[in-house]
Length: 340
Length: 259
Image 1 (cartoon, each protein chain N blue to C red):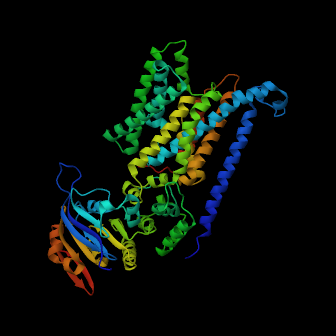
Image 2 (tube, chains in turn yellow, brown):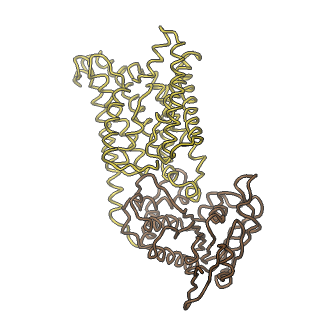
């Protein structure tokens, strides 16, 4: 048996090295983020102060750290969810927000706040159910549209379903108690982490982490699902069942973090593209890279959101701004292969 | 042992919905191990459907299909993927996988549910690429290959699966003459080394070059099946395609002419 081409071994080693670099970068960023903020003076908290100033320590532990963990979970889930949907739908332009998932989750959350009492668990369950409904409706509608190719039909269906749920959210806002319920609902629509405490983080941690770990472990199967149905079948994969499982996991993760942070756009579209560009489309590398890059991207955006001005800029605005810029850059410089 | 049948199709009827007419009607034939078998017929004859039935993608409404002596239903999905390799007519790959990473997917039947391919799998891929003479393209992107190159990569992905049976749907349909010859030569070599090869084509010339046995399919019915010598006649081919054709011999080769 002849020897492997040395390039193959080199490439795998390079990818592993780059992943380690990313993890180190993420850890550094977490440390930096703990010190960034507006106490005691704008932008910077000296690490020495953590030992001398009990208020500083309290602030980092109770306010900044849960927020950082939330940003990490949020970014990892949105980016991983985006990558999984792109691969499962065999379409590099798919994103949870495009397919009615985010709007469905927001509707579910608002519905639960208004009619189900609004406990954190109930909000999550309701957000997940309606997120799955949003995806299901989009998919079914896309199959029945008689216009355009598959990508166009998916996007049109997603727009229609999102608009349907957005109207529902509008109606719920109109019906909501303007003093107690309305502010809570408005929060979903802008998106942000300013009210995040450990309690909220702990509520979304189990479903999110579990979904991400399961997706990570089964990422080789994800590669196979990119193939034509008959080919995937011939390789021993159950195409429809495994697709449905992957979609379910990514929607659970997405809906959980949406119930925590509200609607955060563009992370799920742009980060997988970056991950594929830096590494390879192979999910062995693209999935962990998406998770880490998504965490870094969201953490940076949240740092900007809370540090840039005296007030707080909604996180969704910053991710959309940076995400859209990155998207324009990618789409004008890279040939994205899509069957329109 | 060499006469054991790889595939036995017996009285198979199939349609995609219960109300529509039969796509396949009373199809019966057998495939000997280690031979090249060609399902030949015009467009829409049901060739691909027949291939998908053998793959196990659909079940026949009536009749049975046996693989290596056992009925189709006796093989579990995971086991089937180690028996049958499949090369589709076209494979749209939406992401720019490298040739090596794409061919590596062919090792999936040997991996556990959460297992990643290892050193042994990478070696198997490299050996296959060398065997098909495409190892120099290992780091090219599958999205940027010509039709001929891509066909070889698709075949490599199925060969690395190391199955005793290989099904190919129109493997020569979009190829120029040089690539066609290359692909047919590879299929011949695989069969000579013991793999049973079954492929569909609408092109009698491809069949004439490599086939040991030919199944003539027209409108869902199997008109004739048997060895190339028996089946490849002027009368049979004219009936299959519904136009007057003539089969002549030049040396050892059979040539199909349109009158």
